[in-house]
Image (cartoon, rainbow, N blue to C red):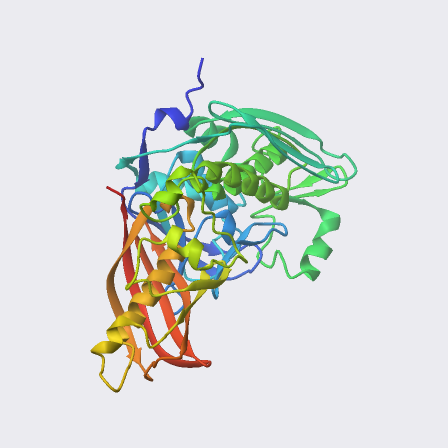
Length: 455
């Protein structure tokens, strides 16, 4: 019989009905912070928004944005960074919230009491709203495993989400075991209230490492020898291992979709959890990467040739023409020379043979500025379509802002198109692009484009 977990009970994506806020102190940063949960459109996922930074940058809760996993999981994108996201993400994943925005006026969510209790109450206060788009659950097709030192995590195909976990310190103290089918009900009653904990001898190291600046017995349980230091009795007989399971739910949600699998973990950590999330994401994306990456294929590609875009790769003209729908005379990029996270660099060799030079202008050939904008949009489109859920779609240029044309581009120039994807929310993408010749800026703009499914 199939377990009645949220993977099956909820057929459509969910968001929040309204906003909810909570204030407190960050566990590691010690900063005072106001946090607000907001509804978000379908297919936009969970996003953290730094309202204290210029432009209010957003960071998608995706494994590709994980930067550090020392005692917590942190995300960054560009100059924006968010520490200790796992408890907030666990609250959303446990309750089956697919799309939401988390606004923060500092770099770390308030820790509350060290569990996910405060975040669960925020979701309850905001309410849950079903959305029109269907929910897609990824069920593993093959087992995944990770092992390092005493940490061992395996994930097996399973209809719902099940976690079986063993927790212990290096000396084998307070060894605990717990196993649970995760549903909204079991999440809320069996895991959400489990508090973070540490061993007394770890505290000095954590302080010297610049961590737990906001830590206290109000938001953590401390184990000293055989004694448990806490402001209240343990909430569960196995509170320590249950908190480890809470962390697993939060970290694995960074895959980007609900998971059907049985997680068997021994002495898990944020680093190990995130490595497993990467493996799951790779398995999830594999059939999508085998699909066409951007546009209706030319006849030669219809035989099953695949296009996969990875960090560090270069795309020559042949691969670009298999990837992009644009053709002469409107292909405004000859190759991609760099892909790094949310940044990408393309090159366009401008020759006297460009057809627009016949009329722009006779005896004074200058590349039209709008075609430099188009080059930025085409390169940005490649960046947007690196996301697995966007494979096979078309990117349509919608608008441009903060446009500046600074110097003319002439035949013989090599146009370097430097683009950073600044926002990718649902079908809408935004990017900041700069065109350079010989290292000098010739034009720049912020462009917006929309993705559409092929017809």
